[in-house]
Image 1 (cartoon, helix red, strand yellow):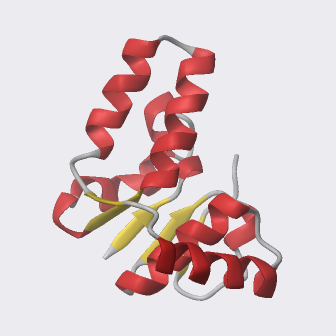
Image 2: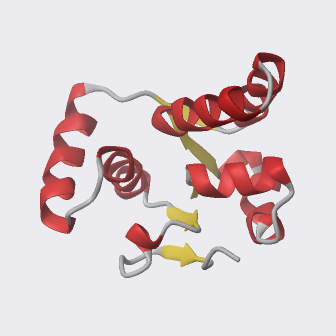
Length: 124
């Protein structure tokens, strides 16, 4: 199971230099977990930088994976992880989701680089 965090999705959609790193999990929809918080972040950035249609197309692509909504037990686990690892809210939700599904996190976000089960690619 794999999670591509928001930075990975945005690199992919923008065709950034690191986009290729995220192709393996993105091409395997059967093992792709999509925390709903990543949909929020990706939609917001693309809406700000492009058009609503572009943002909606990105969200449609993200729905090829299994979308996991933020429910109370996951929110509580995320809050604990946020305090334990000094993570921002979205990152702690992504981490909690990864732990719940035993998934690897694919990311460019340095907040994750020292955590276990993370495939970190420094942003170029």
